[in-house]
Image (cartoon, rainbow, N blue to C red; front, side):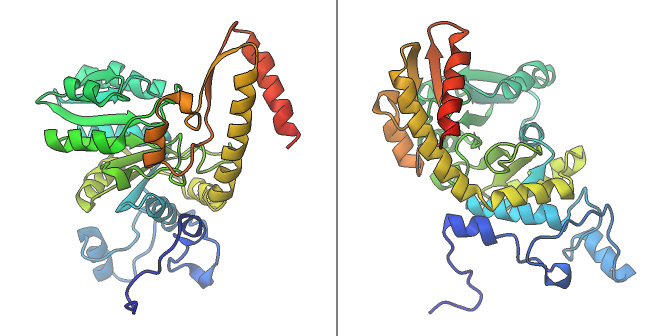
Amino acid sequence: MKRSDEKPFMGKATKAIHVGTSGDFTLGAVSVPIFQSAIFPFPSAEVGAEYFSGERAGYIYTRLGNPTVNALEESVAALENGEAGIATASGMAAINTVFLALLEQDAHVVCTASLYSATSRVLETAFSRFGVKSSFVDTSDLDNIKKAMGPKTRMIYIETPANPTMMMSDIQGAAEIARGNGSFLAVDNTFASPYVQRPLDHGADIVLHSLTKFINGHSDVLGGMIVCKTKELRQKIRAMRTLLGGVMDPHQAWLILRGLRTLPLRMEKSQEIALMLARFLKTHPNVTWVRYPGFPEHGQQEIAQKQMEGFGSMIAFGVRRGLEVVRILKTCGMIWNRL
């Protein structure tokens, strides 16, 4: 018998639709309202004092928390099976918040060599000025991670699938290395989305997203999200986000929530189309190679099958001549338009 205080089981598609909609919203709105307010009144001075002291949960100032933003945080955290989400103004705001919260002077980070360019650039040009050292290695081979670890390694930071090479890293294996070294494992899960992959289930401590991509899905708003495995991490990283001020606007959060509700349908269809396009590219005379996790020749299909529920919808490929990519992409667009 299910206890009255237990939450009902929800599959990932149901979570995408319903989680985050159960707040105490004005007039019982079915859709999460946009609380476009910078400040919130207190019922009394005594209650306000309890809000500020942390004795009671409540809204004070949107930089500190907002009902619309919190609904999005709850939704993404539920999809990732995490303790809590922390929304930011952009994906890079999420990444920088994690780095600033967890990396001290002279700390060392081991990163995927094939990393989103802005992430590697901020480590090399900004954090290096404050003594943070970074090693960029092929994390698809766990031995490379082990060799790069040192006494001051504070974090392993991986992207899987990686941007833009589509190389895979074993999340569980990387998590075991991190734990053995007393380090954190952070995973950029943007290329997979929580519908396809949930790194926390495989031992990661932190998951990051550029919500601009799959989760929003409409190319009309920026956003970032950090999902933490533990309450302690959530408190530390959220405090840094609040101090930095890179928070999400309520209207921005509402737009992303709208996109999130259709994530399951979009991911299923986009994976179907990706497989179709990948097969087409394999037969194209001017394509020299195709890297898609759904193909055995990718070389890491076993890892993908272990930690992903599907192969995603991103493809990497090479061409014989630079300009050929334009013609090939036009052909792909023609195939897309006929669907």
